[in-house]
Length: 360
Image 1 (spheres, rainbow, N blue to C red):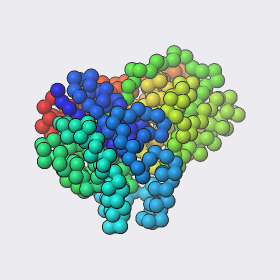
Image 2 (cartoon, one colour):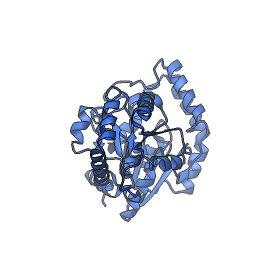
Image 3 (spheres, rainbow, N blue to C red):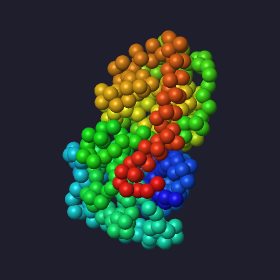
Image 4 (cartoon, rainbow, N blue to C red):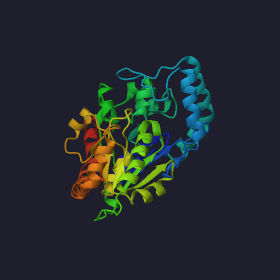
């Protein structure tokens, strides 16, 4: 039996829970440690509740202000480089060191209480250790454990890889296609999800219902989505459900009422994420912005590719052609089950494990 530990600041979109289920389904043991509680209600396993970090609006806003003032950068600005590399001024490193002094007693207590040194494979989500100097990961490396760094997008684009972690990583993973072009040694995995847990409706709503959920309007292009859908309520009699900063259970409840889900039409992301997976699993048609690289990477995809300029046109076509809408709904569920159900995604992860010498 293989023992796998995930270490992550938070269970951001519930992914850690799916990895845990996937590993256990294959007869392996898996735990995950999170630094702070997720803001929208995804479950935790080993929760540290560390101070001076949180998924709260006050903390997120303060980080954005800090980045703009201290670094002179826009909140979502890409730092450049292949790979982008974390190299802050010394005073910032000292701030991290001071924060970690406060964290250390809780971390070390958890290491002992949960035997966190007694695992075979360590996944460091966001490519970060408990400590910025990677002291825990380095210790595990010297003990012959396998080190995996899993990057999710902004961690690499706006912060960069942490050199101490990058140097000892046996395997780098990402679910973001653009990061495949940003790191010389990284492998792709489809984001895991429990697709089979969703029941699919067999008919279209009357009126046709469109949904969009966001926690960041700028990244998602939400203002444009709201504008277009508000117009369609008047011109085509659709129902529009807009969700913002809402508990995950409520988000799922509202999404289930829709026929079409709009993920994003912004210029800051390449494709789709967990919001789309939820929608596809429910059998909804998912509208999102895919660039040419993504179109080539997943040529069999069921998405309706749209941007801010042609969003209205693409939605009108679905609204006015119900046979097309229904066909796309069926294709959506079939595709997401094949590529994203965690029972299938873990098979590819185990192939990568074997490549780095993990016996399964």
